[in-house]
Amino acid sequence: GKQIRGQRKGRGSVFKSHSKHRKGPVKHRALDFAERRGYIKGVVKDIIHDPGRGAPIARVHFRNPYKYGIDKMNFLAAEGVYTGQFIFCGVKAQLKIGNILPLSSMPEGAIICNVEEKQGDRGKIARASGNYASVVSHNLDEGVTRIRLPSGAKKIVKSTCRAMVGIVGGGGRLDKPMLKAGRAYHKYKAKRNCWPKVRGVAMNPVEHPHGGGNHQHIGKASTAKRDSPPGAKVGLIAARRTGRITGGSKD
Image (cartoon, rainbow, N blue to C red; front, side):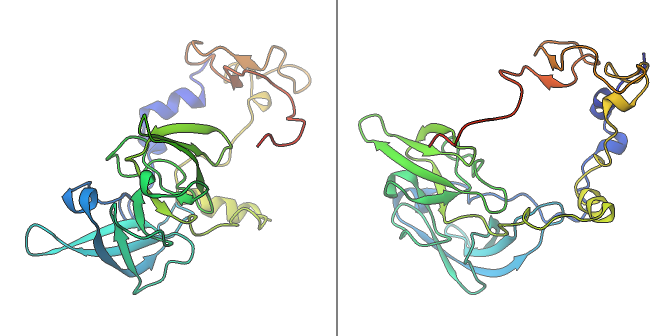
């Protein structure tokens, strides 16, 4: 058969991300003495749109604590952050929307976003528009904190990990239906070449393991094992279960 689409994506070429107009990586300040011991004050200069990202970005200016100059950071804009607002980062910062403090300084039940997975990695969890995580409990003896992720899963991270207070801005983005193909076209044009997607069952046998047949049917199990070779790794990869998700949400 032919190389399938998933294999061609590895080469890059037309499948590279469209990053020309992007505004740069969004991350917390690098962890320094000011944040570990006290706090540092910045001011939101601008709230900007980042192409290919549903969440707005806040341009925050800090005075450099070590040499003359201004550090310009791109932060995720929490909902309710405005231009001219002061943003405080550090252990001694207050629990106010937009401020960045370690989980150890937050009460249980706090709503947070852009959470660090490991101390100093500058934010990895709950970064999509409208998303948030919440602090479930602190274990002071071991210095770890349980947080609830946007998926509903619980995760244990070090209490020294930082997070921004509040939920990510730009929420409710998926409530409005796309309505027409042109809107989807422009949405994915800003992201990368991944639309429109031809279904595997609609192809010929040469192009996809699900292709061919007198009716559109998969003809074999839709699940594929985790170590399937590229080209056979299609469908539901390493699925623990298949079918509809029934039953209420388990909180």
